Image (tube, rainbow, N blue to C red):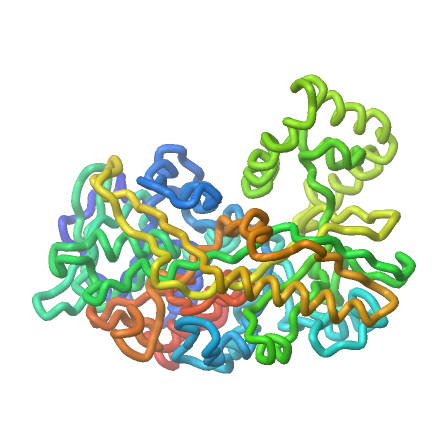
Length: 559
């Protein structure tokens, strides 16, 4: 059942077999997998079932460095379903190389194998409503098995891999009925956790919640933190009643090795083949899932050149700059406040630079309006299609892909960041309305990150240079240039309570149990030692399924 904790009139102490803190992708997956386990489970959500500006404000930070890192409340949602309420739906698995020891990257070691996670892909995809575990074109489109572009004879790039997309599914909505009907599960909303409680021997005892201003202790022999990469670190660091530097932080590792994915528009892809020979857009797979091909730097190239994971996707010109002369892009810019916050933020960041090229604000907006007026028929056709396939559709077209008559596209990069001990989430002196210390973000990259990116970019460019069908123009791209172009992806908060072989190397073990607090577990991307290039949600769900099996062997249930 689902209970508003403000109205529950709970006793000062409530006992359970298992407590799950957080109701996002990790928490909901774990709770539903255990719904017939015989365990009495509480899942505790700080927010309600709907967005609340008041609850959202509790996610704000004390300080952020650098300024390119997004505000900590922008890509997180304090409500039932967590950030699945706003995610884009992209589902990509981690690859075997992501779990390999890579000596050329600092602290790039997983204490588990790819196989430990991969066996959960089918169930994870079902939970995310993203179809079958098929991640190449031949599987997804038996009748159209071609790569993104033909004629590239190099083992350094792979062009037939695909990403799959959820509807995107809001876990708090699609699985609400299952949570409501689960006899062994009570979901408490409006119940922010303010302290992790331990016994004198440091074994977990439970959590303390603030329920409409009243402190309530929920106790259980096992507690799972599934609150996201930032909030999980915050809860551990702020819980100092039993361990003076924070729970699990005896070696100063909680919050460290904080990673985001690196993204930016770097260089241009020029396809020389006819448009009919290219596969750049989304397509529905045989199981009716939107999928799209991408350009992947092969594992062989990564090992040979000592690189990290990276992909390229053909993009479109900057929406902000009216010199693109495209009616759809100008229309998107003028309604930027009504689109996905991530894209709106990126546009706002670019706007000040580009407006400097215009003599006045009127000139700038006038150029956008002129684009719309000139291209009104094209915009009308696009708008009708967008309404049908995005606005009104249950399974939504993931994003805008606009064909360029010249086959000339900006290259959008997503890349892996090296784990960095100095990159961290910590807590500051200022406190929120509940008395919790606000987080401080100190996200750091290294020269090695950008040097690897330069080599990755030039490896792909060289692979394409020998073909007659595609070029990747990266002239002038060096470390200094990339430092200006690359920003952290806003919603991917990774590595702050990493799993490791020992307490000297991480916060939790291979079963995600905190070394210094037996019975306390970490679920979600906080436990990832490395980030891959892949969006984390699918792996978050898969690892939550793995954790469920550990907590209740033989008693988990397919969703």
